Image (cartoon, rainbow, N blue to C red; front, side):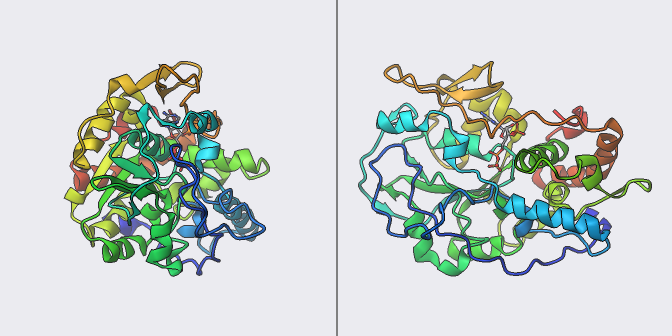
Length: 376
Ligand SMILES: Nc1ncnc2c1ncn2[C@@H]1O[C@H](COP(=O)(O)OS(=O)(=O)O)[C@@H](OP(=O)(O)O)[C@H]1O
């Protein structure tokens, strides 16, 4: 199997506990609740939440790398751990949406009901399109989702299930509670922990061409830390020999077959939905139909909820007539990727191909990444 081609993953040390997230602060619907689990004093509580899959949660580099590389990589990792994928950063026009007390075209339910543990999770992948998916599915009146990433099963697990439940929005009978934390997909302990909470939970993974995903991941880091080495430098253990550094998290996260193997020890394939990150952009309604079917929901989110915003280059959620606020994701999505040396792309294609093929076999879905240019 492809995993035998890889160096064994190095287990990271226990991460330091991050600040506690506030309750559903992304609910665009209801008036804010009094925080039962306030953010740690002196921190912003949320701004430091990872965009998911940062190296801290997964795969530090091997000690074989030269020391200067390790220093650069450590710096990188620290920065990745500080990446944010909060709705504040991701969503344009959220305040306006809040002010109008409206929720993606669906009139909100007031703050009734009770907080429940999630019945469905978006577990990955980082930079796959997870924010777009969450924002689209929460338009559905039978879905309530926490907008921020709770990172319960990777960083906050010791806080316990009651803490986790408190992070969730209140739901009415029949509504599904959801959250997204893209780093779960690459967290070794996550499947076991999630299984012990709810073995019938539904899991959603948004996957994207691993090469594009890696470049997107790198671009995010670069935007915060312009002095990091080039993608080409970080991608190789030995460029002359063409040896890809599979321990760099940007590369490692894209070895989907490897991570999936871990999930399949605990969950049947039928409990996992794989959403194409590429199709989520070109046919959001089509992908949302699959998501709603998988969740056992009526197909409420359809073509009429989306329009293609040419300026952004992405689909955005349509607003109801009485509101002018845009519902496109913010500027942290759709950053311009740096141009990567075509030889490096070529080498990465060769590297990922066996893993991609294995992933297609495991899932029974062909995501057609071999047909793509590489970085799109
Ligand atoms: N509708 C819409 N609007 C904007 N962006 C969209 C959309 N659908 C998918 N995408 C793609 O989502 C990519 C970011 O993925 P994530 O939201 O999973 O990132 S994160 O892990 O939460 O940081 C982001 O990656 P980059 O383009 O590389 O920034 C987008 O390509």
